[in-house]
Length: 188
Image 1 (cartoon, helix red, strand yellow):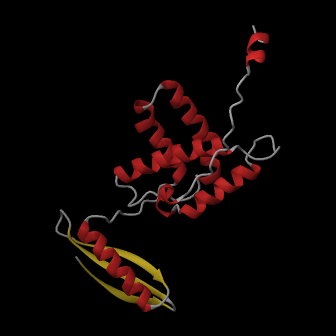
Image 2 (cartoon, one colour):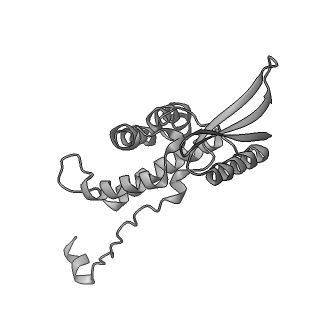
Image 3 (cartoon, rainbow, N blue to C red):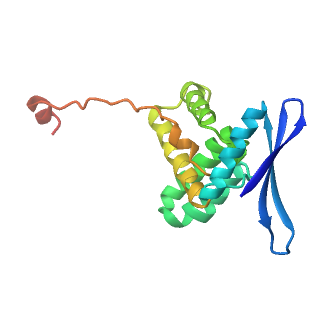
């Protein structure tokens, strides 16, 4: 793979990657815009060339997270989980994850976006407006989001799973209260 850098404007650079020739014999190129210094553009060119040479490069798609999650529900979750589990996945995806995160382009979803959503859900996540969701509920959301993003990596829509870099909240542990002999007798 080869590539070069062109100035595009003040503080903006264009990286042009040569992808060889297509099936029709036409030359194929990939253009990427970088904002910053020429050094930043050179670093990005080196990173992109390395990813292309190692096969880790994933073409960014225009798909939003919401569109992807709907596709994931139908193409993956429907056939790989129990029917009741699928119903719960649909409920969580459509009522919580898509309204909160669905507008982000799939390729641009960052761990920071996910972490901010978890914090917001813990403080103000209830639909009735009476406070936040429990940590256990947010962990459930995290598991679904992480599983769906892992499938996006397998389907080569993403190079890495952004949910892997997010630490979900730790659910509160409750000490189990054990009945003494008198309480056991009185319960019968």
